[in-house]
Amino acid sequence: MSNQPTYPLMPHATASWLVDNTALTFEQIAEFCGLHILEVQAMADDLAGAKYTGRDPVHSGELTQSEIERGQDNAEYRLKMQKAPISVSRTKGPRYTPVSKRQDKPDGIAWILRNHPEISDAQVGKLIGTTRNTIAAIRDRSHWNIANINPKDPVTLGLCSQRELDALVAKAAKKAGIEEDETASNLRLGNDRDALIEELRAEREAHVKAASQAAQEAEAAAWLEARRAEGISDS
Image 1 (tube, rainbow, N blue to C red):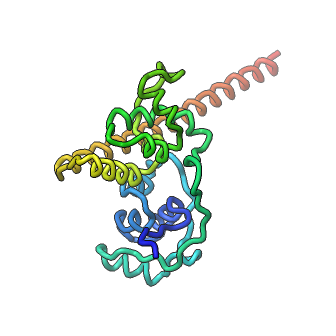
Image 2 (image 1 turned 180 degrees about the horizontal axis):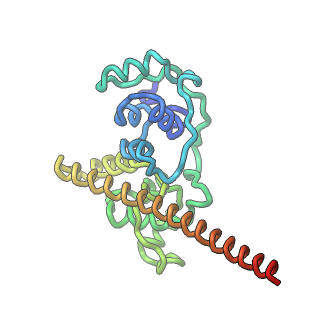
Image 3 (image 1 turned 90 degrees about the vertical axis):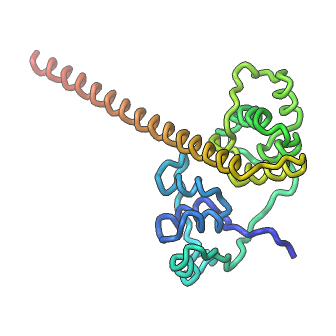
């Protein structure tokens, strides 16, 4: 019998529903959904780049109301999956990445190569969903678009979750005999949190700025149209 933890079929949508409809802590929601606590916090603060339609885990049978109430009564309680979701898993081929995110892959690969050289090419390929040839080309700077590749955290790019990256870093470090003390770990987590929040905040501000500019352009167009109409009526 597998000891692998079981998570909801749609973890982000489930987390969004739990944030909006329960008093569970971010940590409880993150652990139940298999997400990083910063992802849940970003949802609660409305900083997440993607907006998810909530999925009720009680309706799907993955949780019961009584289980949720146990968690709300005790912040230390860890929610238990009531019914494992039926899902189709891919066992061959690279991770699927939405078309809109594929152009970001080289930036994410470059970031991992620079910051975590202990991670093998096979591990990078599985995490990002790419080939060893692409990784090698970025490493030796023979990639066709190398001049435009800027190392960026794959988590903030949406190529993987913080939990997946942390687990891979820990696994690779252990295999390489690299020990990370608690202070360094806490510092890295703090830096990751700051980077994620800053990235999400910048994205939200860009959206607001774009909406404001569009409104101003529409107002100017309406004013010009009104002036033209006045000119026609005057004549």
